[in-house]
Length: 166
Image (cartoon, rainbow, N blue to C red):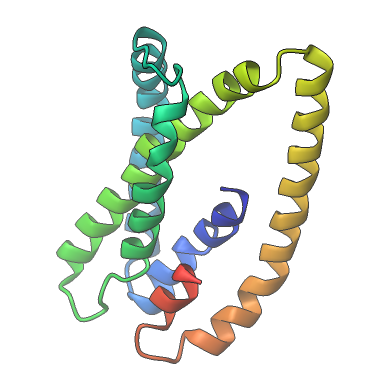
């Protein structure tokens, strides 16, 4: 998920420069989505806490990584030829699904899975530290690579889709 955050950092650029959407409306869409995300955090936490599965409380929710990436790819596949209203709706739906639903679920169950996978507190601390370090490195790599990838792919037909899928 860390690398996807580097990709998602370019949604604003994609929306304004490729889709030619108004930056103020795009910002308002992001604000509304973040408010929805804040509300969904409580809902998702309640759902995850109150459901138990044979394989554990958090593990079955990990399947959300698939629709998470599908929504990211769809978001970067919005055709520039659509009408502005359709583009705004698609952007809001995909951005909200990614952040307010799937990323929230994945983040919520991450700690549950970690607690059950590593019983010792010292192991969890070590794994969390390593994961944070790797996450930081992948964010740095993504930050360095994204401008290069954008310059290569943005001029191609479906370039944003290909770049996101890669």
